Amino acid sequence: MEKPAARIGLKHGSGGRAMRQLIEDVFLTLASPVDGIGLSALDDGAAIRVGDRWLVITTDSHVVHPIFFPGGDIGRLSVSGTVNDLAMMGATEPLGLTCAVVLEEGFPRADLERVVASMRETAREANAPIVTGDTKVMGKGEVDGIVLNTTGVALAERVVSDAGLRAGDLVIVTGTIGDHGMAIMSRRHDLRLEGDLCSDVAPLNGLVREALRAGGEDVVAMKDPTRGGVAGVLHEMAAKGKVGIVIDETALPVRDEVRAAGEMIGIDPLLVANEGKAVIGVRARSADKVLAALRAHPLGASATVIATAIGERPGAVILDTGFGKRMLAEPEGELLPRIC
Image 1: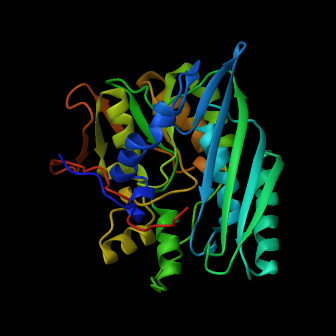
Image 2: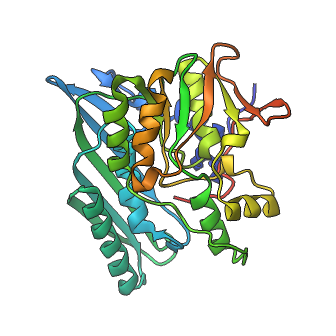
């Protein structure tokens, strides 16, 4: 048995197997029983029964570098990420968000005002009011520029977990994959790759609302493929649902520029973070209705069925290339740290 690391590494915050193991070994000691979904479920948030409805709560911290990138910035990312985590649990109408900001001494005020303006615009787009917050300033070198934490709360009639897949269900991704991670990588390392690499960061609550209206209780699992990418999400869904998942590689929606960048630097888009996409598990009988609803929304025009859940090989994710099948390993950690 592998001995736990004595010190924390970047991989422990990057959404893959190492991060999950750290959470299970250390943070799950905080878990307490709740009437609903709590910390031990390791879902996108918690859901607590309040009368005949569910109170959904989620929190997230954002440390992306650089803080301004093609298609967005840390402000848009922070609001979108929290709104999306609520939506992935079926809570598409946020009651409110909190915002806690940790700043480094010397951080440019103009950059702060730009970030706040972006948060304000994204909150309006998502109809998610920012209702309270906190500000701290650290000494020079004690924090890298700016860290944002956002918490969201919402009420939902029905909670959707990430553990509901069963054999025969279909898995939909709401659009092209790998956009955010490749855009960050290109800007951070000045790769000067050809093509328009742009983050997909966006609040998805409106898109998810349409999927839920179309599919109802046949929408059985949802998760946004951020750190660890689509591959990481599918491994979680397979393990929690005790099913195998077979991916149709030919169906994966990937922009040409993302595919070309991935081939150039040797990174599979399945492993790359997204910030404006959802992975949705649906009973097969309702897949067409959900797809139609997603494609009718501006953020879901490229929605595609990419995988099928099977009864064999529970917990395994299998890639069908069209010429053969191979096991897709769970990512150890995000290939690019500080991506969200």
